[in-house]
Image (cartoon, rainbow, N blue to C red):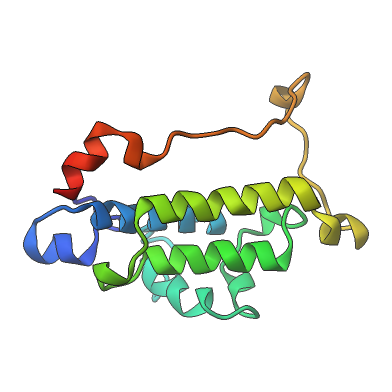
Length: 163
């Protein structure tokens, strides 16, 4: 709560937390995952200290979004998948809370990407010979399966937050 770089603008202004404040914070985490960068890093060049402020202009542009993406993820996604996740992150990071999706919508969007990835595979990356993810010691004997996560709306905490 209130951690600089993760706190929603309305929380900083009013001190009141809402479910949409959590969506903003999740958008920051999603952006960190996409970019491989911390939310706030004073060691980055001037103008790039705050990840959200720096990345937002690139997230909405299909050609520029790759400036934000972590190069270590190369070959593990299609450009359409990357753009969809970037667009979702951008929606979560909307300055106006009323324009942010609720967590149910975020979960559904991520599940749709997961399902389409499992059904269609990553044909773009493998067809053009792009680098694939390196295997780690943890991968030995591991079988990838679709995980199903409980919907936030099923939680008694979620219904209390909406009130």
